[in-house]
Image 1 (spheres, rainbow, N blue to C red):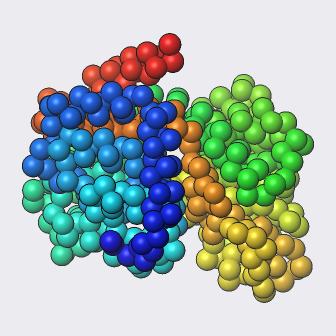
Image 2 (image 1 turned 180 degrees about the horizontal axis):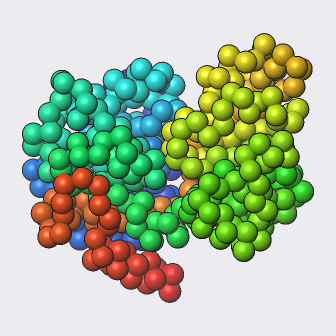
Length: 397
C-alpha cells in the first residue's frame, strides 16, 4: 500500500461499493472495457497517471487495466478519496498519495509515478509533463505520448512549454464533446451542487460573479441562473463577453464586479485572477471559490498575508479577517471545490462516462500509433470524437 495507512476492511468495502455503483452507471466505458479485454491495446505498456482519484476516475483506470495496461497513478492535491484509492490498490493498481498530502508530498508522488518509467502519460494539469521535461532526473525516452484532461494543462503546454513537448499529447479538453457535455453541463451542475453542499446557503437571489466565460464558465453561469441567482460575468475576451451578454448575463469590469458580488467564482484556468489589491474592494462576508484545476486563480497566499486572523468554521471553509474588519470566506483553500469539499462528488457520472471514453479511446489511439499524431499538444482525433458521440447517443436512447 502506497502511503495509505488504514487497512480497515470496512473502509475498503466502502471504496469498492462506490466504484461498483459508478461502474454500473457508465455504460460507455463498460462497452469500451469489453472491447479492450478482447483486443488488449495496452499489452506490455505502462500508463503513468496524474488524475483526481475518485470513483469515476477509478472506472477509467480499471478500463485501461482491462486493455492490458499496468497502471501507476497519483491523485491531485487535496482531492484523493482514500477509500477509492485503497480499492484500486486492492485491484492491482499502484496508487501514490492520500487526500491529506502536503504540496511537497504531492510533488513527490508525481516523481514516484515517473520513476516507474511509464510509456504513456495520462495527465491532468500537465504536472507529469512538466516534471518529465524540466527535472534532470527524468527522461522522455520511452514515452510514446499521452493525453491531457484540462484547460489549465493545455494552456501550460501551449504557453510555458512551447516547443518542449517532444511526444504527442491529445488534449481532451479541446474536444467539442468535452466542452459541451462535461465542461458546460457536468461542471455547471457540480459547482452549484457543491456550493449548496458546502455552504448550506440559499442560491435564490445570491449575487454571484463568475470570472471566465469559457465552457466551464458558461455552465456555471447557466446553472446558477437556473437556481435563481443574480449572475454577473467578467470576461476579457470581447467575443465571449458578447456571448455572455446575449445569453442574458450582465457584464462588468473586474473591480465593479468584485464590489457587487456576494459570491465570487473563478473559472479561467489562469493564475492571479483575484489579486491582493482586490480584497479591500470586497463586501464583508464575500465567499471566494475556485472551479479551475489549480489553486492559483485566487491569490490565497496574498489573502493570508493580508489577514489579521484566520479561522476554520466548518470543514473546507475558512474565515479571513482583514485589518479593516471585513471578513472574506474561502472554500477549500482555493482548490477546485467540487472535488475538494466535504463529501465531494465532482461532475455527474454520465458526463464523466463520456469524458473518460474520450480519454480511453485517445490513449488507445496513442498506443496503436494511429495516423495524424504530431509532437506536442493537439486536438482529439475526429474518429474518437464521432465514436464517442455515437456511443453516448445510443446510451441516451
